[in-house]
Image (cartoon, rainbow, N blue to C red; front, side, top):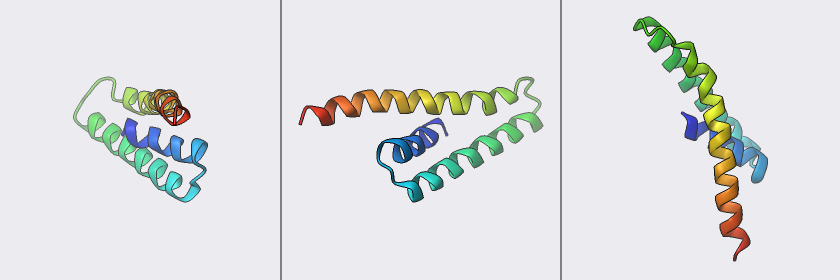
Length: 76
């Protein structure tokens, strides 16, 4: 789910593909919500961490992707 959110950010902010970005961000948000609800029903004490850390991980993935791909594409 972190990768899906990160790809959504990459599509929106770097590539300006807004339609695809909305799909990726919605799918990432849905996966995060479903996993958080599943963990809460399973009795996990800190199930809310999933909802907090997924966007943080998505942002970290986006920043890593931006650094790596910008370096690779800039070298061409």
